[in-house]
Length: 172
Image (cartoon, rainbow, N blue to C red; front, side, top):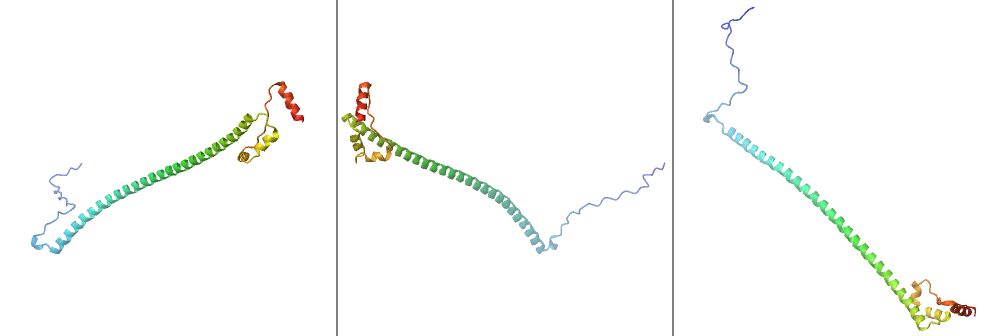
């Protein structure tokens, strides 16, 4: 076993620094062009930093504008669709109301012509078929013939005596 003597060993050399600290040059040796170049680099770096900040803000602002525009388009589309639905619903309601009014007018007109027949029967209860036909075919009743599909005179028979008289009149 061999042990080295600490005295035998030489002192280790001091490690060299990984970088050398900048050495300042005396002011008389400083080149003015070099100073201007360094200042322009610093200024350019500042300007580039500002431009980078503006660009990143521009990106955020442009994204916000894009999202806002898309949201506005969706809202406008929905409003337009609702507007079209409202317009079509209103048009349908107006058409339905018009059809309903037309049908109601037709029914009222038919009821008027039926009332005319009822009034004729009240005035002349023993009206003959010939007279009834002449009344129904008259100019006053003509508009009723366009909508009424049929109108006939059916005398009311109450009891067997009326029936015998009706049957006797029909055989003649």
